[in-house]
Length: 365
Image (cartoon, rainbow, N blue to C red; front, side, top):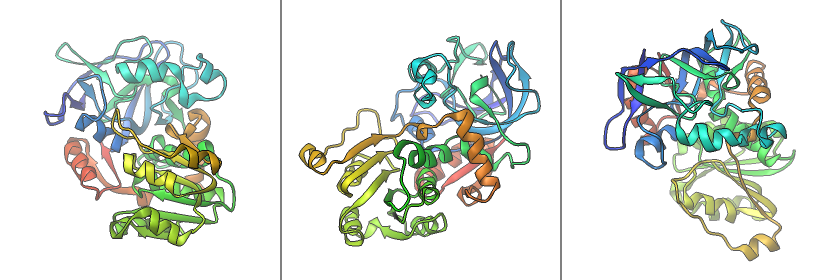
């Protein structure tokens, strides 16, 4: 099949032929309908994160089940699925306690080592082992994933658009509803109005937040955020975002979401908080990045700093529910789609995302 292979940050990603082995026990093969291009893919391409190379890129996608491995009873050939880059093992203490986004096996083996649950990969090229990216590798015509990483959804949902639910939507909306548990009537600031940030905005709207302040250096993105539910806009290219926010909300906000993940934006989120507020780190920084805050202020103001991995979701429950909300008109996905491009154009799609112009590009095999 065709796939997009990353080798190292100095080498362009390659659209090439690779071999995909059949699924083993507990796995399924999925024909990809669409794969979303995410900033996490950029982090890998830049070398910001340690990644087991060479690997087949991509972690956001949707498709149709075409083959079942031994012992799989939760899915059937022909099922429409959204891929989850956390495929819960169901056995670790986090999975057993209902915190699948923290799955220990995913965090310590599948993700860092670029393998599936048995410690091996299904990907190769001319005898060379290729690694999976986050257990998915959706920049390909087909994938083999653990059955728990292919989440069955309703058949009438458009397969291309719902690819976004597997990362951007689950991460952004989940950060609001699950990680932070934003309450109705709250005031919310969202730093960064890209694919994830816009989903934080619409998550805040779903939660019933009274005021939602969208912050970005691109005015066109904060304008789009209004369509997703923002009540106020701040063009951070025109001055210090913290001062501009406090001009709008003098007492500070109840929740500030960093949907970018730079040291500076994390620090800004903390500085935007009012009494009892919570700063939620959703965007992911480079490995080793450090942010600072004043502990005395944090303690005296009864504030919190929260990390949100994958929106603290339970994939088997939250992903179908988010697809339902899209189909019921409660969630917007279509305005997030910047373009639909052939899989062969993955390198160009990554460049567009790097430029800051694109929201989500869907690669269509």
